[in-house]
Image: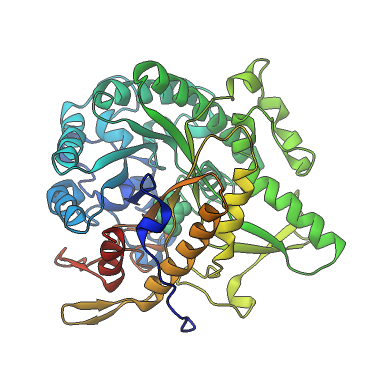
Length: 451
Ligand code: GAL
Protein backbone atom coordinates (compact mmCIF):
# COMPACT_ATOMS: atom_id res chain seq x y z
CA UNK A 1 0.00 0.00 0.00
CA UNK A 2 1.24 3.50 -0.77
CA UNK A 3 2.55 5.40 2.23
CA UNK A 4 -0.02 8.03 3.20
CA UNK A 5 0.26 10.84 5.65
CA UNK A 6 -1.50 9.83 8.87
CA UNK A 7 -4.65 11.85 9.39
CA UNK A 8 -4.75 13.20 12.93
CA UNK A 9 -7.79 11.75 14.62
CA UNK A 10 -9.29 11.63 18.10
CA UNK A 11 -12.30 9.59 19.18
CA UNK A 12 -13.61 12.71 20.90
CA UNK A 13 -13.95 14.44 17.48
CA UNK A 14 -16.89 12.12 16.86
CA UNK A 15 -18.76 13.35 19.95
CA UNK A 16 -19.39 11.85 23.38
CA UNK A 17 -22.32 9.71 22.34
CA UNK A 18 -20.57 7.96 19.44
CA UNK A 19 -20.35 4.17 19.99
CA UNK A 20 -16.98 2.47 19.49
CA UNK A 21 -16.40 -1.24 19.46
CA UNK A 22 -15.07 -4.40 17.85
CA UNK A 23 -17.01 -7.12 15.99
CA UNK A 24 -16.59 -10.88 15.83
CA UNK A 25 -18.61 -13.95 14.79
CA UNK A 26 -19.06 -17.24 16.65
CA UNK A 27 -17.85 -19.65 13.98
CA UNK A 28 -14.77 -17.59 13.19
CA UNK A 29 -13.43 -17.47 16.76
CA UNK A 30 -15.02 -19.96 19.13
CA UNK A 31 -13.71 -23.39 18.23
CA UNK A 32 -15.22 -25.98 20.60
CA UNK A 33 -16.98 -27.28 17.50
CA UNK A 34 -18.45 -30.29 19.30
CA UNK A 35 -17.98 -29.21 22.91
CA UNK A 36 -20.63 -29.74 25.58
CA UNK A 37 -23.47 -30.88 23.37
CA UNK A 38 -23.09 -28.44 20.48
CA UNK A 39 -24.71 -29.64 17.23
CA UNK A 40 -23.20 -29.42 13.75
CA UNK A 41 -23.64 -26.34 11.60
CA UNK A 42 -23.41 -25.94 7.84
CA UNK A 43 -19.91 -24.54 8.30
CA UNK A 44 -18.79 -27.60 10.30
CA UNK A 45 -19.86 -29.69 7.32
CA UNK A 46 -18.57 -27.33 4.61
CA UNK A 47 -15.07 -27.20 6.12
CA UNK A 48 -14.90 -31.02 6.02
CA UNK A 49 -14.25 -30.62 2.31
CA UNK A 50 -10.67 -29.30 2.05
CA UNK A 51 -11.26 -28.22 -1.55
CA UNK A 52 -13.69 -25.51 -0.44
CA UNK A 53 -11.32 -23.79 1.99
CA UNK A 54 -7.94 -22.18 1.32
CA UNK A 55 -5.22 -24.61 2.40
CA UNK A 56 -7.90 -27.05 3.64
CA UNK A 57 -8.03 -25.09 6.91
CA UNK A 58 -10.65 -25.97 9.53
CA UNK A 59 -12.21 -24.00 12.38
CA UNK A 60 -12.56 -26.75 14.98
CA UNK A 61 -10.31 -24.81 17.35
CA UNK A 62 -9.62 -21.48 15.58
CA UNK A 63 -8.98 -18.85 18.33
CA UNK A 64 -10.45 -21.10 21.05
CA UNK A 65 -12.58 -18.22 22.29
CA UNK A 66 -14.77 -20.94 23.81
CA UNK A 67 -12.09 -21.46 26.45
CA UNK A 68 -10.27 -18.14 26.23
CA UNK A 69 -13.17 -15.69 26.35
CA UNK A 70 -12.02 -14.23 29.67
CA UNK A 71 -8.54 -13.52 28.36
CA UNK A 72 -9.99 -11.82 25.27
CA UNK A 73 -12.54 -9.73 27.15
CA UNK A 74 -9.86 -8.61 29.61
CA UNK A 75 -7.63 -7.70 26.68
CA UNK A 76 -10.48 -5.64 25.19
CA UNK A 77 -10.88 -3.84 28.47
CA UNK A 78 -7.16 -3.11 28.64
CA UNK A 79 -7.48 -1.60 25.14
CA UNK A 80 -10.30 0.77 26.18
CA UNK A 81 -12.86 -1.07 24.02
CA UNK A 82 -16.25 -0.80 25.65
CA UNK A 83 -18.63 -2.35 23.12
CA UNK A 84 -18.27 -5.92 21.94
CA UNK A 85 -20.28 -7.35 19.05
CA UNK A 86 -20.38 -11.16 18.86
CA UNK A 87 -22.78 -13.76 17.50
CA UNK A 88 -24.56 -16.74 18.98
CA UNK A 89 -23.89 -20.18 17.56
CA UNK A 90 -27.39 -21.54 16.87
CA UNK A 91 -26.32 -25.18 17.37
CA UNK A 92 -24.70 -24.48 20.73
CA UNK A 93 -28.09 -23.36 22.01
CA UNK A 94 -30.34 -25.66 19.94
CA UNK A 95 -28.26 -28.66 18.79
CA UNK A 96 -31.13 -29.94 16.64
CA UNK A 97 -32.02 -26.51 15.26
CA UNK A 98 -35.33 -26.49 17.15
CA UNK A 99 -36.66 -28.27 20.23
CA UNK A 100 -34.24 -29.35 22.94
CA UNK A 101 -32.27 -26.49 24.48
CA UNK A 102 -28.64 -27.24 25.36
CA UNK A 103 -28.16 -25.77 28.85
CA UNK A 104 -24.36 -25.84 28.49
CA UNK A 105 -24.56 -23.68 25.36
CA UNK A 106 -26.82 -21.14 27.07
CA UNK A 107 -24.46 -21.17 30.02
CA UNK A 108 -21.46 -20.36 27.79
CA UNK A 109 -23.10 -17.18 26.44
CA UNK A 110 -24.31 -16.28 29.93
CA UNK A 111 -20.71 -16.39 31.09
CA UNK A 112 -19.53 -14.28 28.12
CA UNK A 113 -22.28 -11.70 28.66
CA UNK A 114 -21.75 -11.54 32.43
CA UNK A 115 -18.00 -11.22 32.06
CA UNK A 116 -18.46 -8.36 29.57
CA UNK A 117 -20.80 -6.56 31.95
CA UNK A 118 -18.48 -7.10 34.94
CA UNK A 119 -15.78 -5.41 32.87
CA UNK A 120 -18.07 -2.58 31.76
CA UNK A 121 -18.18 -3.79 28.18
CA UNK A 122 -21.59 -3.60 26.51
CA UNK A 123 -22.53 -6.80 24.67
CA UNK A 124 -23.99 -6.37 21.15
CA UNK A 125 -25.42 -9.68 20.01
CA UNK A 126 -25.91 -10.83 16.41
CA UNK A 127 -28.40 -13.68 16.24
CA UNK A 128 -27.33 -15.12 12.92
CA UNK A 129 -23.80 -14.88 11.57
CA UNK A 130 -24.04 -17.69 9.01
CA UNK A 131 -23.79 -20.94 11.02
CA UNK A 132 -27.14 -22.56 10.26
CA UNK A 133 -27.79 -25.94 11.91
CA UNK A 134 -26.91 -28.66 9.38
CA UNK A 135 -30.02 -30.57 10.44
CA UNK A 136 -32.13 -27.68 9.12
CA UNK A 137 -30.03 -27.44 5.96
CA UNK A 138 -30.90 -31.10 5.35
CA UNK A 139 -34.49 -29.88 5.03
CA UNK A 140 -33.50 -27.14 2.57
CA UNK A 141 -32.16 -24.53 5.02
CA UNK A 142 -32.84 -20.97 3.90
CA UNK A 143 -34.63 -22.20 0.77
CA UNK A 144 -37.36 -23.81 2.90
CA UNK A 145 -40.08 -21.38 3.98
CA UNK A 146 -40.25 -23.20 7.31
CA UNK A 147 -37.02 -21.36 8.20
CA UNK A 148 -39.25 -18.50 9.38
CA UNK A 149 -40.64 -20.80 12.09
CA UNK A 150 -37.23 -22.27 12.96
CA UNK A 151 -35.58 -18.86 13.10
CA UNK A 152 -38.40 -17.45 15.22
CA UNK A 153 -37.89 -20.21 17.76
CA UNK A 154 -34.14 -19.58 17.88
CA UNK A 155 -34.76 -15.84 18.33
CA UNK A 156 -37.22 -16.46 21.11
CA UNK A 157 -34.89 -18.80 22.98
CA UNK A 158 -32.06 -16.22 22.78
CA UNK A 159 -34.29 -13.31 23.79
CA UNK A 160 -35.63 -15.29 26.78
CA UNK A 161 -32.19 -16.42 27.87
CA UNK A 162 -30.19 -13.20 27.41
CA UNK A 163 -32.67 -10.33 27.03
CA UNK A 164 -32.49 -9.39 30.73
CA UNK A 165 -28.85 -8.28 30.17
CA UNK A 166 -28.40 -7.84 26.42
CA UNK A 167 -29.96 -4.58 25.23
CA UNK A 168 -28.34 -4.32 21.79
CA UNK A 169 -29.31 -6.88 19.18
CA UNK A 170 -28.74 -7.46 15.48
CA UNK A 171 -30.97 -9.97 13.74
CA UNK A 172 -28.91 -11.01 10.67
CA UNK A 173 -25.36 -10.50 9.51
CA UNK A 174 -25.16 -9.56 5.83
CA UNK A 175 -28.01 -11.50 4.24
CA UNK A 176 -26.66 -10.66 0.77
CA UNK A 177 -23.43 -12.47 1.53
CA UNK A 178 -24.82 -15.60 3.15
CA UNK A 179 -27.50 -16.06 0.48
CA UNK A 180 -25.28 -14.89 -2.41
CA UNK A 181 -22.09 -16.78 -1.52
CA UNK A 182 -23.91 -19.72 0.12
CA UNK A 183 -26.94 -20.27 -2.13
CA UNK A 184 -26.03 -18.64 -5.46
CA UNK A 185 -22.28 -18.95 -6.01
CA UNK A 186 -21.78 -21.99 -3.80
CA UNK A 187 -18.45 -20.70 -2.43
CA UNK A 188 -19.66 -20.52 1.18
CA UNK A 189 -21.69 -23.03 3.20
CA UNK A 190 -23.90 -24.80 2.32
CA UNK A 191 -22.38 -24.61 -1.20
CA UNK A 192 -25.65 -24.42 -3.12
CA UNK A 193 -25.85 -22.68 -6.47
CA UNK A 194 -28.19 -20.94 -8.85
CA UNK A 195 -31.20 -18.65 -8.84
CA UNK A 196 -33.53 -21.46 -7.82
CA UNK A 197 -31.73 -21.60 -4.46
CA UNK A 198 -30.83 -17.95 -4.13
CA UNK A 199 -34.27 -16.44 -4.70
CA UNK A 200 -36.20 -18.38 -2.05
CA UNK A 201 -33.26 -18.07 0.39
CA UNK A 202 -33.22 -14.29 -0.11
CA UNK A 203 -36.97 -13.87 0.37
CA UNK A 204 -36.98 -16.04 3.49
CA UNK A 205 -34.06 -14.08 4.92
CA UNK A 206 -36.05 -10.87 4.38
CA UNK A 207 -39.01 -12.41 6.23
CA UNK A 208 -36.79 -13.65 9.09
CA UNK A 209 -35.10 -10.27 9.43
CA UNK A 210 -38.42 -8.62 10.29
CA UNK A 211 -39.83 -11.59 12.24
CA UNK A 212 -36.70 -11.61 14.42
CA UNK A 213 -37.09 -7.87 15.01
CA UNK A 214 -40.72 -8.27 16.12
CA UNK A 215 -39.92 -11.11 18.54
CA UNK A 216 -37.06 -9.16 20.10
CA UNK A 217 -39.27 -6.07 20.42
CA UNK A 218 -41.93 -8.07 22.25
CA UNK A 219 -39.61 -9.97 24.55
CA UNK A 220 -36.99 -7.26 25.18
CA UNK A 221 -38.99 -4.03 24.90
CA UNK A 222 -36.16 -1.85 26.20
CA UNK A 223 -33.63 -3.11 23.62
CA UNK A 224 -32.06 -1.33 20.68
CA UNK A 225 -32.80 -3.62 17.75
CA UNK A 226 -30.94 -3.56 14.46
CA UNK A 227 -29.78 -5.76 11.64
CA UNK A 228 -26.73 -5.53 9.39
CA UNK A 229 -26.05 -5.20 5.66
CA UNK A 230 -22.96 -5.50 3.52
CA UNK A 231 -22.59 -2.53 1.18
CA UNK A 232 -20.08 -1.24 -1.35
CA UNK A 233 -20.02 1.74 -3.62
CA UNK A 234 -20.69 0.45 -7.14
CA UNK A 235 -18.95 2.28 -9.98
CA UNK A 236 -19.28 1.63 -13.73
CA UNK A 237 -16.02 0.26 -15.14
CA UNK A 238 -16.29 2.32 -18.32
CA UNK A 239 -18.19 5.53 -18.77
CA UNK A 240 -20.63 4.16 -21.31
CA UNK A 241 -24.40 3.78 -20.98
CA UNK A 242 -24.34 0.00 -20.73
CA UNK A 243 -21.87 -0.07 -17.82
CA UNK A 244 -23.72 2.78 -16.14
CA UNK A 245 -27.00 0.88 -16.32
CA UNK A 246 -25.23 -2.26 -15.11
CA UNK A 247 -23.88 -0.37 -12.10
CA UNK A 248 -27.40 0.76 -11.13
CA UNK A 249 -28.61 -2.82 -11.40
CA UNK A 250 -25.73 -4.26 -9.35
CA UNK A 251 -26.28 -1.55 -6.73
CA UNK A 252 -29.91 -2.66 -6.46
CA UNK A 253 -28.82 -6.28 -5.98
CA UNK A 254 -25.91 -5.76 -3.60
CA UNK A 255 -27.00 -2.69 -1.62
CA UNK A 256 -30.79 -2.41 -1.78
CA UNK A 257 -32.31 -5.88 -2.07
CA UNK A 258 -32.44 -6.65 1.68
CA UNK A 259 -32.97 -3.24 3.24
CA UNK A 260 -35.75 -1.84 1.05
CA UNK A 261 -38.40 -4.47 1.85
CA UNK A 262 -37.72 -3.89 5.57
CA UNK A 263 -38.38 -0.18 5.05
CA UNK A 264 -41.67 -0.90 3.26
CA UNK A 265 -40.28 -0.08 -0.20
CA UNK A 266 -40.59 -3.60 -1.63
CA UNK A 267 -37.93 -5.20 -3.80
CA UNK A 268 -36.00 -2.97 -6.25
CA UNK A 269 -37.36 -4.86 -9.29
CA UNK A 270 -37.35 -1.82 -11.54
CA UNK A 271 -33.57 -1.49 -11.46
CA UNK A 272 -32.93 -5.25 -11.08
CA UNK A 273 -35.60 -6.99 -13.20
CA UNK A 274 -34.21 -10.42 -12.27
CA UNK A 275 -35.86 -9.89 -8.88
CA UNK A 276 -39.27 -10.26 -10.56
CA UNK A 277 -38.47 -13.96 -10.34
CA UNK A 278 -39.02 -13.68 -6.56
CA UNK A 279 -42.76 -13.48 -7.19
CA UNK A 280 -43.56 -17.23 -6.92
CA UNK A 281 -42.11 -17.26 -3.39
CA UNK A 282 -44.06 -14.23 -2.16
CA UNK A 283 -47.31 -15.05 -0.35
CA UNK A 284 -50.15 -12.52 0.02
CA UNK A 285 -49.21 -10.82 3.32
CA UNK A 286 -45.44 -11.24 2.97
CA UNK A 287 -44.57 -7.73 1.86
CA UNK A 288 -46.25 -6.28 4.98
CA UNK A 289 -44.54 -8.87 7.14
CA UNK A 290 -41.14 -7.87 5.72
CA UNK A 291 -41.43 -4.46 7.33
CA UNK A 292 -39.87 -3.75 10.72
CA UNK A 293 -39.01 -0.44 12.33
CA UNK A 294 -35.40 -1.07 13.34
CA UNK A 295 -33.81 1.23 15.93
CA UNK A 296 -30.58 1.16 13.97
CA UNK A 297 -29.17 -0.22 10.77
CA UNK A 298 -25.69 -1.73 10.77
CA UNK A 299 -23.76 -1.14 7.57
CA UNK A 300 -20.56 -3.04 6.81
CA UNK A 301 -18.18 -1.63 4.28
CA UNK A 302 -14.75 -2.73 3.11
CA UNK A 303 -14.31 -1.68 -0.49
CA UNK A 304 -15.96 -0.52 -3.68
CA UNK A 305 -16.72 -2.57 -6.76
CA UNK A 306 -16.35 -1.67 -10.42
CA UNK A 307 -18.77 -3.46 -12.69
CA UNK A 308 -19.22 -3.90 -16.40
CA UNK A 309 -21.87 -5.24 -18.74
CA UNK A 310 -21.24 -8.83 -19.76
CA UNK A 311 -23.36 -10.79 -22.16
CA UNK A 312 -21.78 -14.00 -20.89
CA UNK A 313 -23.31 -13.86 -17.41
CA UNK A 314 -26.82 -15.32 -17.45
CA UNK A 315 -29.75 -13.34 -15.94
CA UNK A 316 -27.78 -10.40 -14.62
CA UNK A 317 -25.45 -9.63 -17.56
CA UNK A 318 -22.97 -8.03 -15.18
CA UNK A 319 -19.43 -8.72 -14.10
CA UNK A 320 -17.33 -7.40 -11.24
CA UNK A 321 -13.87 -6.35 -12.45
CA UNK A 322 -11.40 -7.60 -9.84
CA UNK A 323 -9.32 -4.99 -8.06
CA UNK A 324 -6.11 -6.82 -9.03
CA UNK A 325 -6.98 -6.17 -12.67
CA UNK A 326 -7.47 -2.46 -12.11
CA UNK A 327 -4.04 -1.38 -10.90
CA UNK A 328 -5.30 -0.03 -7.57
CA UNK A 329 -4.27 -0.44 -3.93
CA UNK A 330 -5.63 -3.76 -2.62
CA UNK A 331 -5.87 -5.79 0.58
CA UNK A 332 -5.04 -9.51 0.87
CA UNK A 333 -8.67 -10.23 -0.08
CA UNK A 334 -8.05 -8.50 -3.40
CA UNK A 335 -10.42 -5.76 -2.32
CA UNK A 336 -9.67 -2.22 -3.43
CA UNK A 337 -8.68 0.19 -0.67
CA UNK A 338 -11.09 3.02 -1.36
CA UNK A 339 -11.93 5.10 1.74
CA UNK A 340 -14.59 7.34 0.08
CA UNK A 341 -16.76 4.22 -0.30
CA UNK A 342 -17.61 4.24 3.42
CA UNK A 343 -18.60 7.92 3.28
CA UNK A 344 -20.72 7.33 0.19
CA UNK A 345 -22.45 4.38 1.84
CA UNK A 346 -23.27 6.40 4.96
CA UNK A 347 -24.71 9.03 2.64
CA UNK A 348 -26.66 6.47 0.63
CA UNK A 349 -28.23 4.77 3.64
CA UNK A 350 -28.66 8.13 5.34
CA UNK A 351 -30.92 9.19 2.48
CA UNK A 352 -33.60 6.68 3.54
CA UNK A 353 -35.79 8.78 5.82
CA UNK A 354 -37.13 5.60 7.46
CA UNK A 355 -33.70 4.74 8.95
CA UNK A 356 -33.41 6.07 12.47
CA UNK A 357 -29.71 5.54 13.06
CA UNK A 358 -26.75 4.12 11.15
CA UNK A 359 -23.88 2.31 12.82
CA UNK A 360 -20.84 0.94 11.01
CA UNK A 361 -20.95 -2.58 12.43
CA UNK A 362 -17.90 -3.76 10.45
CA UNK A 363 -14.93 -2.15 8.73
CA UNK A 364 -11.34 -3.33 8.60
CA UNK A 365 -8.74 -4.96 6.40
CA UNK A 366 -6.51 -7.99 5.85
CA UNK A 367 -2.83 -7.32 5.25
CA UNK A 368 0.42 -9.15 5.81
CA UNK A 369 1.78 -8.42 9.32
CA UNK A 370 5.47 -8.20 10.14
CA UNK A 371 6.54 -10.00 13.29
CA UNK A 372 9.66 -8.69 15.02
CA UNK A 373 9.80 -10.40 18.41
CA UNK A 374 6.98 -8.98 20.48
CA UNK A 375 6.22 -6.20 17.99
CA UNK A 376 3.65 -6.98 15.34
CA UNK A 377 3.85 -4.21 12.88
CA UNK A 378 0.86 -3.65 10.57
CA UNK A 379 1.25 -0.20 9.09
CA UNK A 380 -1.10 -0.94 6.21
CA UNK A 381 -3.98 -1.82 8.52
CA UNK A 382 -3.33 1.21 10.70
CA UNK A 383 -3.27 3.40 7.64
CA UNK A 384 -6.46 1.81 6.28
CA UNK A 385 -8.34 2.35 9.55
CA UNK A 386 -7.24 5.96 9.82
CA UNK A 387 -8.19 6.79 6.26
CA UNK A 388 -11.60 5.11 6.50
CA UNK A 389 -12.24 6.73 9.87
CA UNK A 390 -11.46 10.15 8.40
CA UNK A 391 -14.27 9.53 5.93
CA UNK A 392 -16.62 8.51 8.74
CA UNK A 393 -15.68 11.70 10.55
CA UNK A 394 -16.40 13.74 7.44
CA UNK A 395 -19.88 12.16 7.29
CA UNK A 396 -20.44 12.89 10.96
CA UNK A 397 -19.30 16.50 10.61
CA UNK A 398 -21.67 16.97 7.69
CA UNK A 399 -24.49 15.95 10.00
CA UNK A 400 -25.16 12.55 8.42
CA UNK A 401 -26.99 10.01 10.53
CA UNK A 402 -23.94 8.06 11.75
CA UNK A 403 -23.70 6.98 15.40
CA UNK A 404 -21.05 4.32 15.84
CA UNK A 405 -18.17 2.31 14.43
CA UNK A 406 -17.05 -1.28 15.10
CA UNK A 407 -13.71 -2.57 13.78
CA UNK A 408 -13.68 -5.92 12.01
CA UNK A 409 -12.09 -7.52 13.94
CA UNK A 410 -10.65 -8.03 17.39
CA UNK A 411 -8.33 -11.01 16.88
CA UNK A 412 -7.15 -12.72 13.70
CA UNK A 413 -9.56 -15.56 12.99
CA UNK A 414 -10.94 -18.11 10.52
CA UNK A 415 -11.85 -16.08 7.44
CA UNK A 416 -14.47 -18.45 5.96
CA UNK A 417 -13.42 -19.89 2.57
CA UNK A 418 -10.09 -18.05 2.86
CA UNK A 419 -9.13 -19.99 6.00
CA UNK A 420 -6.40 -18.46 8.20
CA UNK A 421 -4.57 -16.75 5.37
CA UNK A 422 -6.02 -13.21 5.51
CA UNK A 423 -5.60 -11.70 8.96
CA UNK A 424 -7.99 -8.90 9.92
CA UNK A 425 -7.25 -8.60 13.66
CA UNK A 426 -6.15 -5.71 15.85
CA UNK A 427 -4.67 -8.55 17.88
CA UNK A 428 -2.40 -11.18 16.35
CA UNK A 429 -2.99 -14.85 17.05
CA UNK A 430 -0.33 -17.50 16.77
CA UNK A 431 -2.61 -20.35 15.68
CA UNK A 432 -0.11 -22.96 16.98
CA UNK A 433 0.18 -21.64 20.52
CA UNK A 434 -2.99 -19.45 20.55
CA UNK A 435 -0.90 -16.64 21.99
CA UNK A 436 -2.47 -13.19 21.62
CA UNK A 437 -0.28 -10.16 20.85
CA UNK A 438 -1.69 -6.68 20.32
CA UNK A 439 -0.58 -5.33 16.93
CA UNK A 440 0.55 -1.77 16.34
CA UNK A 441 -2.91 -1.02 14.91
CA UNK A 442 -4.47 -2.32 18.13
CA UNK A 443 -2.18 -0.12 20.21
CA UNK A 444 -3.14 2.83 18.06
CA UNK A 445 -6.88 2.09 18.33
CA UNK A 446 -6.61 1.81 22.08
CA UNK A 447 -4.83 5.18 22.29
CA UNK A 448 -7.32 6.70 19.88
CA UNK A 449 -10.24 5.52 22.06
CA UNK A 450 -8.76 7.11 25.15
CA UNK A 451 -8.27 10.45 23.37
C1 GAL B 1 -17.91 -9.76 6.46
C2 GAL B 1 -18.34 -10.82 7.43
C3 GAL B 1 -17.31 -11.16 8.45
C4 GAL B 1 -15.88 -11.12 7.95
C5 GAL B 1 -15.61 -9.92 7.08
C6 GAL B 1 -14.27 -9.89 6.38
O1 GAL B 1 -18.57 -9.95 5.24
O2 GAL B 1 -19.50 -10.41 8.11
O3 GAL B 1 -17.65 -12.39 9.05
O4 GAL B 1 -15.52 -12.31 7.40
O5 GAL B 1 -16.59 -9.81 6.08
O6 GAL B 1 -14.26 -10.66 5.25
